[in-house]
Amino acid sequence: MIQLESVEKVYRTSKIETVALTNVNLSVRGGEFISIMGPSGSGKSTLLNVIGLLDVPSGGKVSINGQPVTSYSDRHLAQVRNEAIGFIFQTFHLINDLSVVDNVEIPLLYRRKLSGSERRKLALRALDRVGLHARVHHFPSQLSGGQQQRVAIARAIAGNPRILLADEPTGNLDSQMGDEIMEVLKRLNEDEGTTIVMVTHDPRLSGQTERIVRLFDGRQVN
Amino acid sequence: MLKNYIKIAFKVFLRRKFFTFISLFAISFTLVVLMVAVAFLDHTFGKQPPENKQDRTLCVFHMVMKTPDGGGTWSSGGGYKFFDRYARNLNGVEKMSLCTETEPVFSYHNGEKIQSYLKRTDGEFWQILEFTFLEGAPFTSDDEKNVNFVAVINDATRKKFFGDESAAGKTIEADGQRFRVVGVVANVPYLRRTPFADIWVPISTMKTNNYRGELMGNFNALFLARSRSDFLAIKDEFQVRLKQVEFPDPREWNQMYGVAETYFENTSRSAFGRQENYQSQNAKFLAALIGAMILFMLLPTINLININVSRIMERASEIGVRKAFGASSWTLVWQFVVENVLLTLIGGAIGFALSRFVLQAITKSGFFPYAEFHLNYRVFLYGLALAIFFGLMSGVYPAWKMSRLHPVQALKG
Ligand SMILES: Nc1ncnc2c1ncn2[C@@H]1O[C@H](COP(=O)(O)OP(=O)(O)OP(=O)(O)O)[C@@H](O)[C@H]1O
Ligand SMILES: [Mg+2]
Image 1 (cartoon, rainbow over the protein chains, first blue to last red):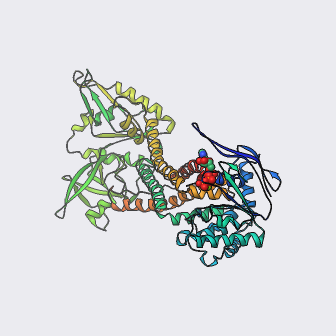
Image 2 (image 1 turned 120 degrees about the horizontal axis):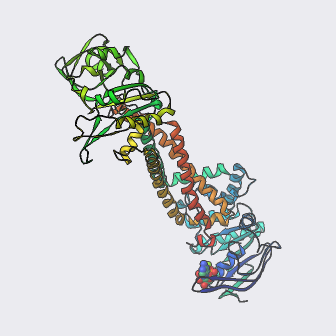
Image 3 (image 1 turned 30 degrees about the vertical axis):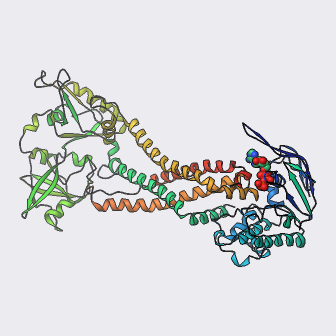
């Protein structure tokens, strides 16, 4: 499903050069739930962004469903992200000006074929799947952190992507809310076969995943 | 898709009330000022009754007389003798009229003191200008020749003297003289310099005959050209006539200057030219007017660009999220441009309603006597087009900057 071959990422500014990833080889099978661990600054987020086609590696090859995406244009990458990938962030990144259901509809806006009522239906179903059907017309600021993260998950799964990428999804939540979010992710993985890659610092959570990828200083350590 | 952008835009507007208010205020306020300025210009210079033949009419508003060394300058209206003797029968002129500049006079009526503006003129005046007569008819060249004490008054003056009754045939007193009213005309706005007055009487009713010997005085001349194409020839011949003036004492005054021009040309020249330099300053004046308008519209644009750019950081997270979930840079540019144009259009609609209201209020206030300010629809469309153009500008640049934001960077904050 996802294939990384000798991926490198170097950040260059006029003064310094930071190597964020060195020779990363990773293969994620469809339906897998894996976690990425490592100390702060070891390149976890960078790796996730490369997998999610948000960031272009400085070297190496990235393939999604067997298709190398290295030469794709901005527009084409956007389309692949839209159809295949859902993102969940540590700080939720909900748009405060929009209601819960409008937030969840965002990925669907960039699909040409959907009508307004179809979008609404898909968004409501996604909210249902995360157990938030009662709060659809609230604004993000009116929800608890755990609820906000569940809205963010609903947004990530609204378009039924095959891959979910989560960067420390429980990082800003207490352990009880964190467990709730973990339950939602596990259910998505088990019931619907969604492939999930999750960055976490929490061994309790990574222990529940099928495989752990460990990074140190931008290198895989296994 | 467009429908969606519009929907989202409205949601954003409603959530960001302060920003929306500031933007709408800037746009509509700019349009209102623009519309009032244009209405003012149109009211002062545009073609409207009684100056229906404005585009064939030239006037001499102002004359200058100089001493031999050029050091002494006498600057005022022209004298009756000068116009009568040197300015008649110019080639291409169909009719010529002389009139004094309007001056305030007082009347005593039933123990009340009434102030009016009085103009003395001739019979041709009423042929060059097409006043709307509510009663009677104008006085004629014969009235002027025979020193008949007759008057044409405007509607407002009739009200002051006679209430709702008719005035024709009745007598009014003005500046200590008594006149028989022969006609009543509709009010002419104060800002229309050539036709404006409350009471018009023949020149010959002047209290003394001194005016007949004067080169300089308080007279204006009106020339009705056969066609606009004669303007240049008329202006040139008028300059030739100036050289022919015989001065009573050439050691005292020996040069005269003046120009036959439209009121707009006169205004440009007083803004940019010099009294003795009779080159047209229209281009400069127009450029200044248009420049001022564009500058004036640029200010809110820059302001909006500023607000929008500073909002980029505020909306970075939104941009990151949209990009992550599949919006291409172009899609985002579109979204923000639609937001701005929509805001501009709403501002335009408010500006339109407000302009009408303000113009009506100015008309009603009576601050400019007999003025009627109208919304100029054509100019409003230009203004709106400009506003949309600036709306695009104020949207495109920030949108472009936004779309350049790297999603990873945008999501970091
Ligand atoms: N835009 C950038 N410019 C320069 N260096 C960067 C940039 N983004 C990340 N880095 C560097 O790349 C390395 C990896 O960063 P990354 O954010 O992937 O770490 P991380 O493992 O996610 O850390 P954390 O657990 O704190 O989130 C770090 O040394 C970081 O300083
Ligand atoms: Mg990180």
